[in-house]
Length: 189
Ligand code: IMP
Image 1 (spheres, helix red, strand yellow):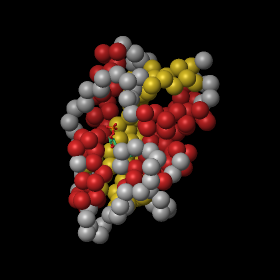
Image 2 (tube, helix red, strand yellow):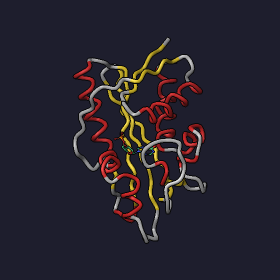
Image 3 (spheres, helix red, strand yellow):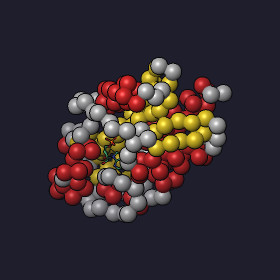
């Protein structure tokens, strides 16, 4: 049995990732590993993910894990909250973003995820993006974070109105995780 750690304390994220792993790599055990993450401030998710991965590798002395950094980038707000999404969610939250977007016509936004996978001394990055728009009001009860206000292109529902499977098919995280899984299939073949 192969085993891999996902460094996160976000249960919502973990559930999504487990679902994709179970369907694609049923023989692999994915463990949630809620280690303390030290994050640098940067406008680039790649730099944040790389720094966190190196920090965890040093601190926890593990070498078979991945971390994921994601953010919501809103066109009309010049990419805000982007890499600061976690802090913005905890402070002004979904309602705060809706207030900032009140009477704003251009509602385009995207989610982006960067995965840093540490394996045998190297770090590999995988990314995923989903384009969509900010809803006029919060809808739905599934998911986490900004899910109730994000409508992916090609759909009229927010992520919070979708099942995990439906969100995974479209989401930034789903895309990045499927790239990681293809890579794992290659190196573990
Ligand atoms: P982090 O990658 O854990 O730092 O996440 C950044 C923040 O972006 C989270 O706290 C969420 O508020 C938001 N976020 C990231 N991915 C998603 C998602 O799939 N749905 C909704 N919000 C998300």
